[in-house]
Picture 1 (cartoon, rainbow, N blue to C red):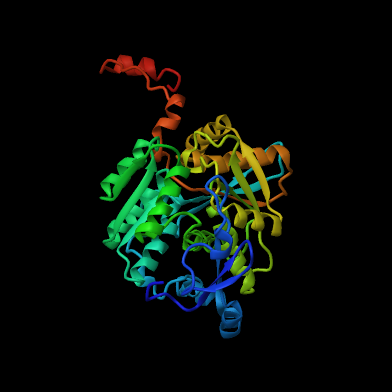
Picture 2: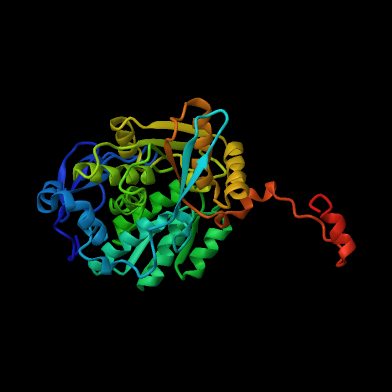
Length: 403
């Protein structure tokens, strides 16, 4: 373990429950990961634990105010917020919309729009924190496997931090995301095969070459970065909780992060329960929503434990429903989301069909990435009209249904 690590945390293995100090282990629990195979979700993912009792005793009822004022630094695995990049990561908008549905009691729909992060995706939260940890430890080179968003995120954050970034991507990753990675100046290496193949190769590179790894869940601090949206939701809702949160799920790192954020607030006594979390997955692992196109979820065990412990629900959605949800988000709400983000809204629509939403309930849909990330996925839905002559008569004819 490099110098500069904070001493305010310990790691807990989600499989065996063993505790480790930050000087003992860096990625996975050695005992549980020893028998891992590439065709199964990895065991030994580590959960980051803080001394919640000390925080409660020190700040009492003023704890949340203290945490907000200090940027939640007491619940982050870094020594200083100055170690984070200067890019504006997090504190993304939470839009509230009243939905007076005829077939449902009136309720509130809220969109947490993380497409407004610097590289236009939720992944900036994890990349910013991992980059800060590396900075405090004097590490200047970071590697990651990605279908595109995590790669472009780490590349952008790394550029701002002056770090060298290596990204392994599956050869079929969307071109828009590859362009982002390349423009940020990272070393982009396409890998013949799937995301899982790229992930496994990056882990081998870390083991054999010693390069610091940002991979989802494999690096426990990715979950710590992604949990910050839970803090923001609570604060933005006036220190109250939504009734439920709809989250797109691939590797299971975002959903585990949201759970972890709410659990931190629960363990510090700031909240007394955790909202219902809805896991929204694609029916097909080869889904059009590339950011959640995963055959072997890397954070399977932690996300499963959270869902079971706090009684969350799981919903599967088809590619058709994902694209339909994306078109509604853009045309009705002015929110252009990539398919993986639209999946969360598709889950909300599906939930309304299957369950009864409570009157005046507040339902948060997590939008995790911009639609500009993957134009090809929605191109079949778009028809660009033929051009007209540059005269008023032609324009009048074209606009006849409006005037």
